[in-house]
Length: 388
Image (cartoon, rainbow, N blue to C red; front, side, top):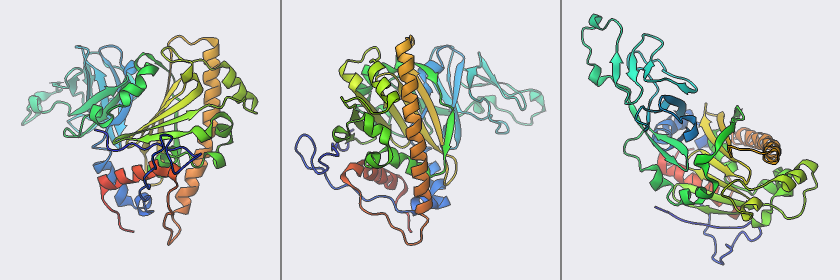
């Protein structure tokens, strides 16, 4: 269900291209949401255990027996493809003494064996198959000790997990987004880089809010200002996701590498020449972004790893057959966006330090920051008000 849609452009922050005024943005979050340990504890339960969390790409588990692991907040989750070809998810923990079962990605064939005491589970349905020295147990009902299931759904080839059996489906939360992603044929793309995992010295919500607004671009990101037509930057807000479009400039950049990117970039299969001239971004609440470029798609997950620290999980996807020009465009793209990331890490770290100032309260949001207000409303809806 779509809750609301808003569209704005920095060139005319009070009016959408269609002529309708943009509603006043909701108020931002107070500093307490980023600074109090009990808030993070509440988030892990009320948000990350009840929302859809990015877990990988269908190409990560192409064959029966393939698995990949992920985190739903601080909760380890296992996603695997069973012998029947179906994708399932389980809590990544042995039912005996709580050891994490698998790490990374790989192949577990037909069974998952805990490396601590050897309890063994069926890799298709999670049933407990075997227990060493089982006669030594006073009571052992294997039918009740299978792996704890989690929900798993996909959108455009991207896998998401949810620990809440009663949460709305991913399809309902992202209603309308799949159609936007179709042209990029994400399910056919292959992972060509992970960019490793990075970390940021800031609360995960500050990282998300920075992503959700372009107001800081003219001040903080000279490379983006050379590449993107900021006056035509636009966004839409829906119930569980947000959509951004940033058209590329027609004029060549004054930077040599950026100018080379403009010249060599070509649209991936399924995209039109029009798609070559725009970078698009999708944000799936609460912490997953999908950056849609003509030459590649980058998925980024912001995982809290402490009150003032965020772990970044990255994945870069492109066409299976990458010619020389495509590989060059992707390298140039990564060069530009790695520089932007470094600038953003510095920005959010400064905010994390600044909001500790006694007596500070946030000022009003600009029209270009309406998505920050949308995000704040979602957070307050999940957590309630947090007293100063």
